[in-house]
Image 1 (tube, rainbow, N blue to C red):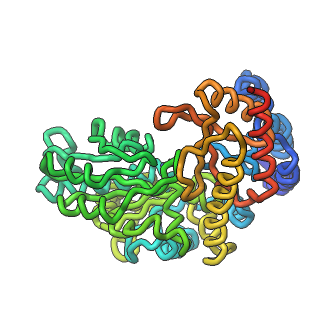
Image 2: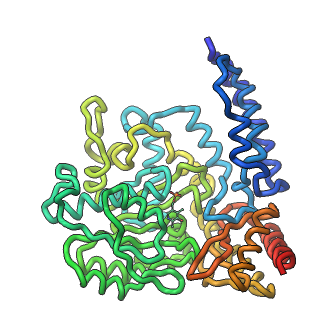
Image 3: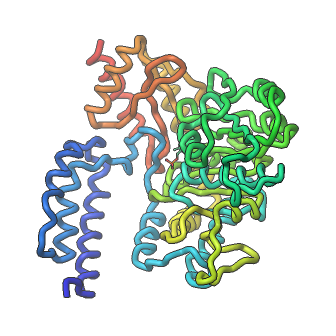
Length: 461
Ligand SMILES: *Cc1c(COP(=O)(O)O)cnc(C)c1O
């Protein structure tokens, strides 16, 4: 037999040792990887050996050869995209989920993980100020959370005009309009493509990327028929929030379904001092967010919340006699996300929330926004640095004079390794994007970030 049950202990002990080394090295390690994906593929690839290798040796090989190709996204000096690290309880719970190996689609079959996810779902509704009684599903990420919510929206808005999309599909269906802000996240367009919609109607946004509610009203008035409006809590360049109350009121006057992409920004709702940013967001119909961003849970932690339970279960659920489903009450987990088989993604979310408590979540989110504001204040004093956005949450967009100079500074920062920040283009300019999302980022990390940017400016003068 190739597999020996005694291998679990040795392999897991090796994994624990390597993990400990990885975590201990994080404060000192360069953030960037030192080898390329091609290098790694060469070491790990070649023909599959005919003979096996014991589990502990496999883990040793992984740890040794993957290490130089790892990006320290878990480091407090990582400021790229909108990533977040992992709080200890979330990481350890994620290991438990693997060991338990529960296929978490059905309440009666996996009551522990289904019940834990329901508890996490209730906490999330409370923290994010969303309607009690909504369905909460644990998807892979915000992209699939958005997809799931938009599938529910498609089902409901077509049902409202007498079309059953489950039976008739989209061919021959009444025209369903989808309106988005000019600065929505591209994953919304992807989700719309998956759902058989073409390109959405684009509504103007202001200089911070917020949808213009008057333009939204005009756009809605210029057409007719069922509609879906997508709003955003947290623009990935500026961190800005759409004006929910006005935009939702315009959408509701036209009977539209409102979906909010709040991948990282929806968490502002958990903090009294930031809650004004999402004022009115609870009036929407569905929301997508991530726990792997602002909450600092390991990946595979998207969250979809839908007020209209019948719509999401009709659009996304599956019914088969052999599954012995729970058709009433809380509903089976598999009715709330696209997957049938899946790991118990909500368990690390529960663990992170329980370890932080309500106060800890507030401190985590408020602390990231405070660090971003402090970084903006300090960088504004550095000659040659322009902070282009109003820093209202966790995001900064920086420029350094010409596009050419900005690109040179970005290249320097990415090669340097003390910190990691990524480039982008926003409002017609090349920029260096900074996101303060890791739980561990502190003033010492900000000192290093400011110094790295000063050095980059000196090196590119
Ligand atoms: C990250 C992000 C997404 C996509 O989320 P994934 O978890 O990567 O699928 C969507 N919208 C916004 C605003 C984001 O920041």
